[in-house]
Image 1 (cartoon, rainbow, N blue to C red):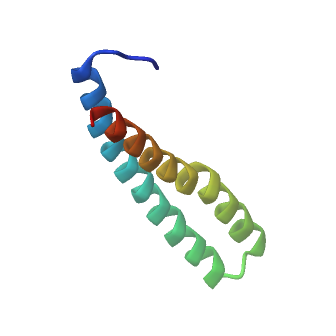
Image 2 (image 1 turned 90 degrees about the vertical axis):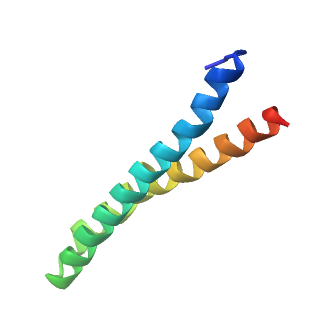
Length: 76
């Protein structure tokens, strides 16, 4: 999304915090479920949960941090 309005850029900057918190919460949930699967020895589910946690929570979390760094450089 290309925006030139400073207020919309600032809104997008603070929105990255919200998205980062969401993905961190989902990461914790997936981690708890993975530990639960590990207790019961479900190796298949452990692998699926770890891979999906990587793609659906860890990568987007890092992406939000990257976007925030880029937006911060625009403000300076």
